[in-house]
Image 1 (cartoon, helix red, strand yellow):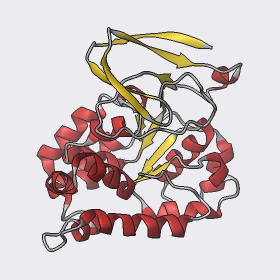
Image 2 (cartoon, rainbow, N blue to C red; image 1 turned 90 degrees about the horizontal axis):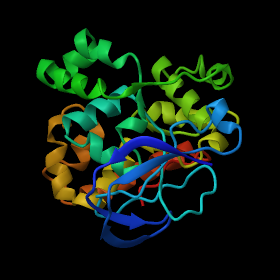
Image 3 (cartoon, rainbow, N blue to C red; image 1 turned 120 degrees about the vertical axis):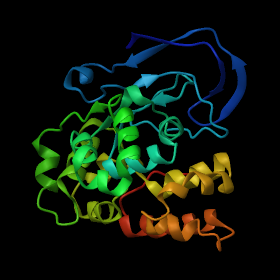
Length: 275
């Protein structure tokens, strides 16, 4: 059933689109958001934080394929779990909220690792991003909920895999258990997931890579706009440095090549498709 969630959204022009296609643009009155509950599964936490709304300001909204069938004609806002690396890079580039919206989510439905603030105050991330950027990231992190821990079923499968650090293991386990989107920038960890029995079926199409989101941004904003946005992290990410180097006139083609290579390496695990 649909349960009213008391967080009305402000009135503004909104693009209405179904689960598959963009329909038309209209101005909506103040809207209400609803949580979707199916039978008793909500009590188990399996579908927590799943929302239905009608808002998107992206040029070409990405239709999200939910993990269950919904035929109401509205996109489904899904729970999104994001790792520390991606969180910091998107924030420094000024693309954090835009990435959430593109993925059909928002801050209310995004969760982060508990370790992020500690690493920004005095750990590796503060050394990487500097004091000013770290303070800015901290201000965004304060608005995002801490990751809801998964049970032991998936954690036990992930523990002890050298390519997967404890933080990524927490995200992957929660994403599989709660049918959430997982946004990870760790290519080695993503590649290692294919060897975990049942994980591909549990996360099919909901594992988002940094390359995939940049492809979607290039399609929505244009490659040159994205090139300017990623300048602050050029020295921190080899893939970004190569794809958006001044000598490369077609960063989108390079990103697609990296994405296809990672998708092939991760097979039969299915990554989130940017197109």
